[in-house]
Length: 90
Image (cartoon, rainbow, N blue to C red; front, side, top):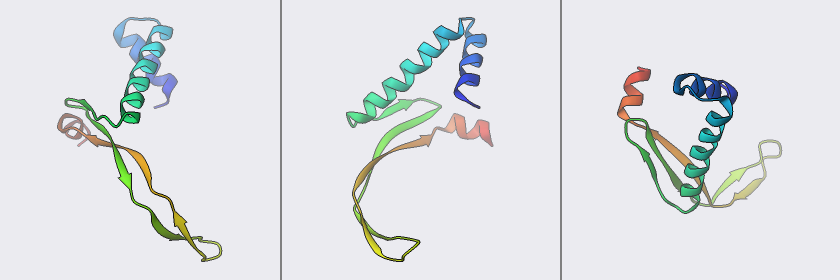
């Protein structure tokens, strides 16, 4: 499902315009992004939890040359599905 398909579904199920649905979706994604930037965790009961995971610096290899490279430490977003979502998919 693409973003435009999701916006269309939100608009039809909520009985609102596509513009309002797109604004609502953007607000949700901006809210989650902002919370993760601050290091907070976002929990949507039944759906899942978004949080930030820290990856340590490590050594890797360039697949073309085989040369060893240093990979920097980084923070990456992570999503863990909730029980209701897991049950719906199975």
